[in-house]
Structures are given as structure tokens and as C-alpha cells.
Length: 290
Image 1 (tube, helix red, strand yellow):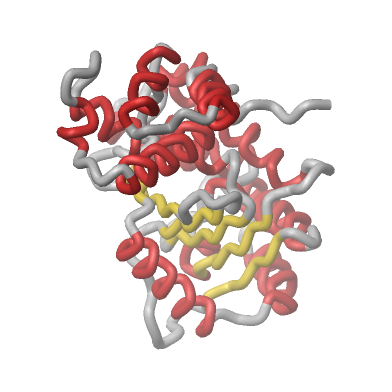
Image 2 (image 1 turned 180 degrees about the vertical axis):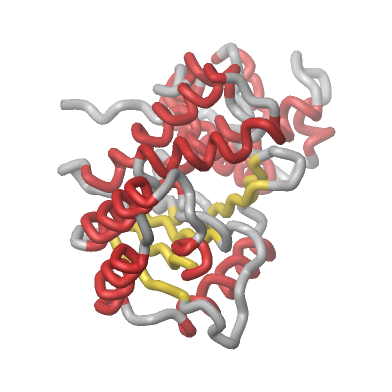
């Protein structure tokens, strides 16, 4: 069975290759588009993977400008362009997503490994249905979100979790669970116990590593969420974090990736070993008052 095209990954891969070809040709972006049927902004967004050429003819024009005449190479890049223009599996619900979320989802979908931390709640990929519902309910009066937004967001979250349990090459996840986040009551005792049980179940998977960062532990703690996605196949490691303006920030700038990596490594070094995680979660479950 042929692998399903992954448009966002194709856009990123095509963009990086085109950027390299432009540099090898010794051209600036302005020089590359001079006299062609698209502008500098378009090429810049294509090189960074934010969009793709709508027409294969525009790509062929650019490759000719770069001196690429090998038909096999041209045809391969045209196939990339065609796949990059196809729809993602979540596209029908994209009108209900936060700004930046579609790009994040496309990148997350092709990640080989993800490292995640959130200071105040359980990371989204690990949330149980009742817990996730409670998180949305908590934010609803502040963000003025609609019931439809919440419904689609919940469906999307459950769909994303399938990457952890699929039989064919499941994504590797290393998550640090902040003890204050684990203790913050959302959805009532039953919802919290369900969440603890789901975390224990996820932690039993070979591809999932969970560590608890104890409350009151001296040392570094990030004050915002940290997500690092390792893509493989020559694609750049990418980071993501939510912003106070309800947008999803995504970048692959090496300086920011290195900074997020240092954050995660500092917290991992202070966290309890993975073997202690079930014990902590079971203890928290016992402490919950009816």
C-alpha cells in the first residue's frame, strides 16, 4: 500500500530544496523571481514551507532559472509540488482552528519523535476525553469559544493521539509531567482518575517515556509549553508553543530550537526517572477526595 502524501511535509521539503538550489545558483530571492509570474513574497513563503506553487508551470519556470535541466529531477520536484498542494486530513475543520494550528498539525503528523512539556496542564497528546473537555470548558468564558469549536477540537485531539498507538511506526513521545499540573483538578475526581489511568497506560507503550517533575523541585521550570518535533528525512527539527494571543507559534530557526532543547533537557535532568511515574500517578489517584 502506497504511503499517504503528507502535504505539509512535502511543502517543507520542497521549500528547503528550492532554497538550496537558489543558493547554489548564486541568486537572491529578488533575482530569482525577476521576470517570472510570481513575486518575492510568494517564493519566500514557498521556501519556508508555508505554501506551494498552485501551478507546476511556475515551478518549472523557477527550476529553469536555477539551471536545472535534468528531467528526472524536475519530475520528482513536480510530484512534490502536486502532493504539497493536496488537502490534509484535518482540512475540513481548519476554519475552527487557532491561527498557526494547521501548520503545527501538518508538522506534528510527520514527526518521528516529539518531546513535550506544559507547566499547568497535561500535554494535549496525553489528555483523556473528560480531562480535555474540562480544559476547554475552563477557557470557554474567557476565549468566547463556540460549542462547535470545542467539539471539533476534541475530535482533533483524539485523532492526534492515534499517532502514539498505531501499529506502523508509532511516533516516539518523551513527555515531562509537572506535578502541579497533575494536581490541578479539572473535571472532578472521576475525570482526574481517568486521566491518571490513561497516563499509566500510555507510559506502558515502548514508544512513550513519561517523567514527573516534582512540585517544589529546585531548578529550571519553563513557564510556557515546550514542544519539540524531530521530523527526520532531512527535514528541520521544529518547535511549537502557544501564545497569550491564542495563536500557535511554530518555527524551525536553529537558535530557537536549541533554546527549547536546553529547556527540555534541564527539566528532564531534574525529573524523576520514568520507572517512578506509575507510582506517583497511583498515589495522586488515591489522594483525590470524593
